[in-house]
Image (cartoon, rainbow over all chains, first blue to last red; front, side, top):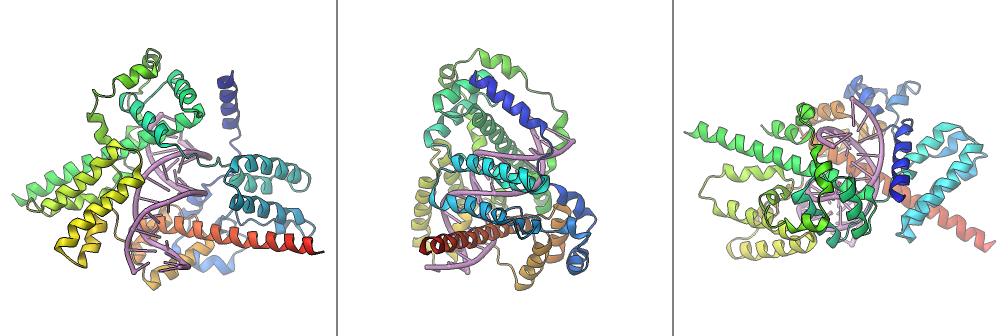
Length: 197
Length: 197
DNA sequence: TTCTAATGTAATTCA
DNA sequence: TGAATTACATTAGT
């Protein structure tokens, strides 16, 4: 049942493709030379929306008007908390609710989206040595564990199945990277040996 | 050649999108319990070599020739260690000590640089004042430069694109940190003012 | 000591 | 799912 609800959740969050984009820079960048970037900074405020520094965490809602005190306040609090408390997850949830309620009233979408950009990121999971050990062991024999193995691991290691899946994804990426590099080394060595002889 | 290796690391394998999918695992997995998977761990030691850290510049070792035993030997040791233990911090320390003792006997100062090299860490890049200036200028208008801007910057500043990317990453972290701190101060001040009144 | 380049990796987004 | 990219925590050089 837990698995089902988790998967429901996954499917649901896949659909909100309208979440904050981090990619605009890519498109925007292609139309800029460095000179233009440097040259434009003073001139164009209108077109600067593309070149505007994208720093969601600095995002002050002071743009919204002077009566928006909470806008300034809430992000401040949400950043202050982690200084005192390592258990960020609870705060993240709380924050989410607060902000969402708040902005639903005042401001439309844009601010909410910006907020969700930093609000929505899952706190980094720190795996224990033992967890890593087991995961690595499983990985050596099966880099693509199915849902059943993942669930079993999750239960045994006291982790979300989601974390397991992501871990394997990243682990496969790492493996592939190292393969590519060792292949490159081989080619390069062969190459330089041929040059020498 | 360096450029090739960089791109090998990053964007090379776009072409293997068409690889055969590895779906069999799902079926196969259901026939495994974790215990049975773990029971197999001894057989596949070959796969473990894949766990090598991602340090492309280690390739330079082989350029030095066969008479450079240390070059070959020590990195081999330092790479072997992590395969047996996930607790990387301890090993890093151990490794450091070993190397340090070893080299302290033979040489003096230049050793330090050699050391970091043997440890597998890229020598710290010292940006020139001009490079920093340009990077900062770009940063003020765009803290998330896309690949094209990064490449352009790399060319103009005579730096690796990788260095540029890392620089922006660290710069964003710095900005975020300072922002967090100032907000923290604000909250703290507001808080104590409210207490006083 | 402080700042920051470099590292490793969990998380996210897109195709 | 892989690939690219990000944030984040940490290590270590100057």
